[in-house]
Every structure is written in structure tokens, then in C-alpha cells.
Length: 511
Image (cartoon, rainbow, N blue to C red; front, side):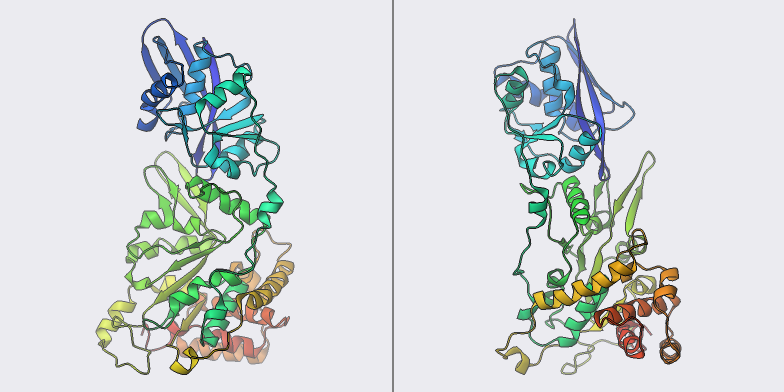
């Protein structure tokens, strides 16, 4: 008897429906074709044990299973439940006339229980697009899949629940998630608040500008000056995600298997990989391609602490994603693109000893050591970072102040106002939402300078020997400063402040 059941494969962040054809005939053998990997080939052992432990059996006949399209490689153990139901229907152990109307996915334990899968949200979106009635999947993944309206999503704990459903012996209630309610779950009191930061007013100002315009930022300062503490608080002043951004972010984390018993992600992600991270872990890829840290940071913040400690080749692979806001992984048989629109926040010591710009500590590094240390970061990468700011240790008097600083909630209000100005400005442009995303054409249109501003910028360019890309960065940051002041023209004081945020372009840093 020939039966068709349906599963799904995830490539990049999109799903492809897989037709699983099960044919049982005279003879003996278990033949699985259609480019399955080893995890799928081993499924017969899990299926046999799971069925036997729940009162069913793997037929002692010739079982032929084709996973179509046959030229597409299938990976992972999530097809166990799909194959098991197909075998039961094809062998006549259960009668399931509606089995072709559902997508079925899940990894089986030997007792018939189900283990979570990756990419549940992408699979649910594809199932709805292709007109399937419902989706059976492990209960651990049900909240993320139930975000999709118009699709019956059933969370399953054991294979017998699916069997009883198709046999009409029990009913299952689909999980219903109010997407708007999930999306509106916000944290009024963030875990990390700028109110807890003593002093560092100029650095907070930089962080506010970076958040308002979506600018990349690097903090340069000695150990203990508060770089990591400040970076961790940046997400608390970013504007809330839109529903579209939340869906995009949830989909990426779902594909990576990072969502545990949760629905829609409503908080912007904050990722902080260790400096020993490889190129693949940062940008994604591998033999079974997975999104890397820069994609997991999509619509959020990627924090690289101690930037020069990262391998140079690891940092260089970030240049293209920083510019294009997506990363493309090419292999001989496929090409996958992951979105990677993130804010880069980096920190570094100013010298190998760490105390180059600390007025209270001696300089312990020679000029050659300084140059070697700073040359670990390439000029082109630094050009892609809009704001460079020096962080100095907080004096004792500031540390002992009892008065709390301005809260993240108050700063966030100004950031949201600036972002609204930018949204209105770019409403006729696709994929442009804030100042950091402007290209050269838009910079020329929206960053028009008067004569005093032009002369000020010209003088700075000549004196600091800035690149053309640095010139564009200054204009974009100045545009954001003007937006924070709700000023339509970019004024000389905006340009002057933006120029100050190019510390690493000055003589004495990179030479």
C-alpha cells in the first residue's frame, strides 16, 4: 500500500515541504531514499522501539520510503514522527484518511515521546501558504508555531496522541496564540538600566545617539572603566520592535533552535560571543548550515568585547554583512542568505597594557607594541563603525553619589521620537528605516550642509586624513544628532559633535 505524508525541511530561514512516500510490499527490508542524512537513516531503530512500546510494530515486510524532492538533502531527526505515521497508515495498522492534510514533524524517543525540533515557525508559515489544514509537532515548539494564524497547530507529547487523533479515538485542541498580546509583552523596568551607571554622561550621550540612528559604536578605554556595563544597557534604550521585526527575529532563532517553550520574541536580542569564536560561528554556515551570531543579532545588538582579541580573519568576514545587512553563505550545491541587520557595539583597551588613555596610569606599552595591537583591527572595518568614543574611569566622587542618573525609560523616549522622525523621512524608501541605513544618495539628499558646516567638515577631513567612508559616517551621525534636537537642518554644532566621535581616526591612535 502506498501512502503520502508530509514533513518540511528548513534551508536558511525558509521552509520547503517534503513529501514522504511510504510503500509496503512483499519481501523484507527497510529502504530509505531521497538524500537522507545519517540521523534520518537511523530513524528505523527509534521508530521500531517507539511503536513497540506503544502497542504497534514495524512491519516485517519490504518498506520503501522516498523523501521528495529527491535531489534535496534532508537533515536531522525531526522526520521520525512523519515516517512513523506513514508506516502505520501504509501497513494498515491505523486508518487515517485525512493524513495528507497535515504537516507532521517530531523526533521520537524510544518510549514514543517527542523531542523538540528546529524551525517550527518557518515550517508553520510554509504549511499555511501551501494550504495545509494543520501541523503536528512537539509540545515544546507549539507556542512559536501557533503564532501563525489560520493553521491548526497541535502540540504533541507522545506518538499515541497523533494515532488516536487520526483514528478518531480522541480529539486534540489546537493551540491558539494571540499574536498581538504576545507582541505587546514589554518590560517596563529593564534588567540593565542606565540609571545604575554613575558618571559617564558623555558616553551615555554617545549611546543615545547610536540608538537613535542605529549606528555602530566602539568604546575604547582601560579595564574597569565600564565599557561592558554600558554596552549591556544599550538594548534598554532601543525602540520596541515592530511586529514584522519580531516575526523576522523569531524565525531566525527558531531555525537555530534557540527558542525554548516561548512564542513571539518581543525583546531585541543581545548577543555577546567570546573572542575565541570562529568565522563560522559568527557569520553562520557549517556542513549543516545554521545562522551565526550576526544573524541571531538581527534587529538587535551584537557586542564584541575586547575587539582586538578576535582573530583578524574572523573580524574581516563581518565587513560585507555590516554593509549589506545580510550574509550569504555559498556552497557547491546551494546558496543561503540570512538577514543580519544589527547594531555592532565593540569595546577594546587602548593598548596591550590597557591604560594608554588613563591619565592616572603610566603608559607601559612601546609605540611598536601599540601599533601591533591596534593593527589587529583593519581600517576598512573601523570605517564601518560610525562612532568611536573614549571611556575613562569614573572618579571616586561620582561613584559615591547617592543621586540616581537618568533612567533608560527617559532616554528611550527621546530615541523613539528621533526614530519617528526618521521613519517619516524614509517612508517612501524600501528597507530604509533609520539614518545608519542611508546610502550615499540619501546622505546627499538629507544631510545638506550650509557653508560654515562645510568648512568645519573640510578642515576636520584634512587634519585627520579621514576616508570618504568616514566622511559619510560623520554626516549620518550629525543627521541623527539633529533629529534628537528635532532640527531639520544639520548645523555646525551637530557636525562638530559628530567629528568628536571619530577617536580612532586621530593621530596617535592608528598613526
